[in-house]
Image (cartoon, rainbow, N blue to C red; front, side, top):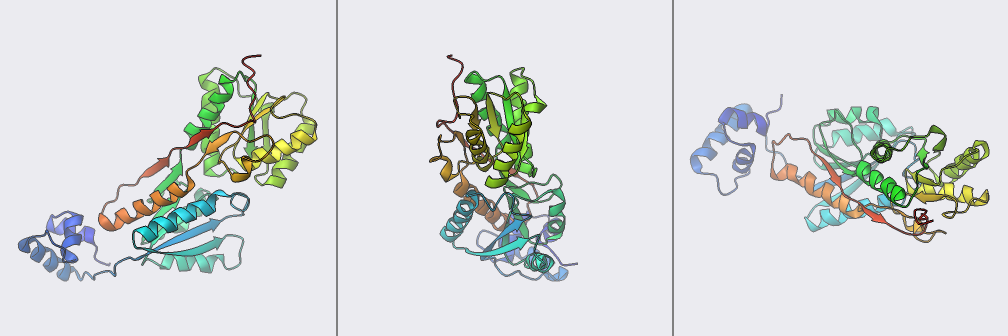
Length: 336
C-alpha cells in the first residue's frame, strides 16, 4: 500500500500540514521535527508526488436533456478557466458522453489521471452515475451536483431556498392557485427546487394540487410539446406557474400563447437560471439569477485548498446564493 501524508502524520504525531511542509522542505519547520518526519517517510517508502499544476474540467453528459439547451455552463467553465489562470494553473478539458460508445474508455482515462485536480460538472448525473468516481484516488470536486454518500466536496446553487422565495413572491402578488412546470428528467437540482416549491405552499397553508402540475420535457421543444398536451386535457388552470428552469418556462409560455392564454394577464410564470434570452422574450421572464462564473471560481479555490491543506477529510457542501430578477411575466392580482 502506498504511503501517505496521513500515515506519516499519524505515526509522527504532527499535523498533515506540518508533514507536507517538511516533505517539501518549506520554511517554518524546525530541524528536529523535519528530521523525524523525513526519517518516518523514508522508512515507509514514501515517494514525493509531483506538484499539481493542472485542473481538469470534466463534463458529464448523461443524455443532454439539460446541458444541451442551457446557456449557463459556458459561464461556469469561463469562471473555472479565469480563476485557474489567475492562480497559475493550467485548465484542461474532458467530455464524458454516457451515450457514446467510447464512454467507458474516456471514463477510465479520467479515473487514471490522478496528477490533476478534477472539477466534475454533475448537473445531469443521478446517484448511480457517481459510483465509478468513488474509486478515484486523486482530488475531485463536483460542480452543480451532489450525491449523498460521495466523499467529495460539492458546489451547488441554493436551489431550495431560491425556489421557495420565487413561490413566496407569487403568493405576495396575490396568487393562491400556483402550479408547477416540472421537468420530466429529475436531476438533483430539480428535486431541490421542488422541495422549495412545496415548502412555500406549506408555509402559507396552500394546497399542492396535482392537476396544477404540468410534467414536461426539459428542452425548449419538448417543454413546448409537453405543455400543449397538458393544456389540451386540462379544464382548470392555476393563476401562476413556477418552472424548474427558464428553458421549460419559455417553452411552456410559447404553448400557452399559441393556445390563446395571455402571459401574464391570465397566467403568470417564474423561471430559474436567468438565461440570456429570457430577458428579451415577450414578456420578459421573471426568474432566479445564478452566479455561474462565481460558482466556477469557488470550485477552483476549494479544489486548491486540497493542495494547501493536505490530509483534511472534511466533506463540504457549498451552496452559492442567487438573486431574484423581476421582469414582466408575473401579474399582481393582490391589488385587483
